[in-house]
Image (cartoon, rainbow, N blue to C red; front, side, top):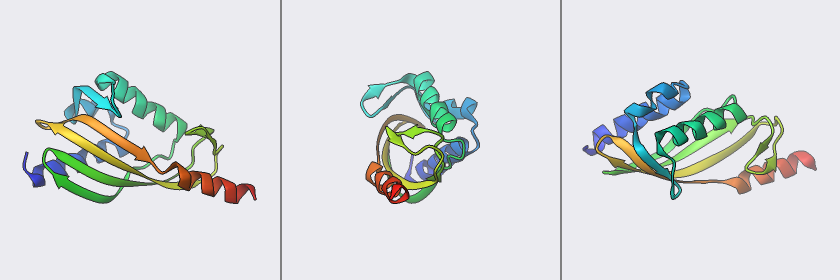
Length: 133
């Protein structure tokens, strides 16, 4: 894919996530997708995303920065959401938090085959601390 097509595909993938249309993940995600070094396959990847939405019902993926260098996408995603209970081992418990995720994707053909992501846990910790004080 060229840069423009890759960006368009990625934006459609994010729209699919925000619409909770997980049945359509197969359009965007390779059958053997790996996430942070763990090969989950599309079934495991879908279960991970469904688990995220279950834990954070108002989860919405907002693209803040997007860079494309085919076959890679780098993205900074912003989240303003309300996890129901523990999130990343932190007692968020229904409080609204804002944080970012820096994520890199490798595409094989037109599908995501590898994902590397890091969530800014320190941002959540500082917000929880402010609320507790």
